[in-house]
Image 1: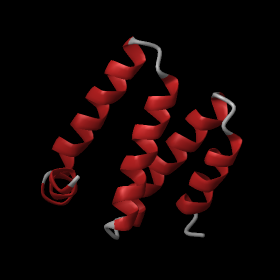
Image 2: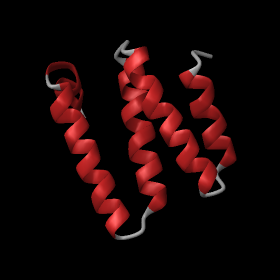
Image 3: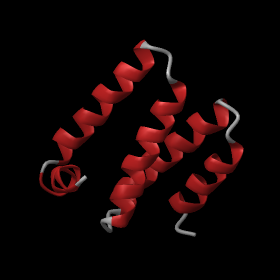
Length: 85
């Protein structure tokens, strides 16, 4: 977890690339939940690190993904976080 935090702070492009690789792997096996969860966790961590504007698109993307798989409560939590609530 600490390595991921450091990567987010020091190499944002590298962190984005790792997320996209994880998303591609999950997509290749049809794991929609993990795509939503990984994307949301990425956004939550950015938010926690004080990078709220950078976190917002990831939180909203994850909310849409959770909505598509019927996980409405998780989607709502992510939307609230994206809006700063």
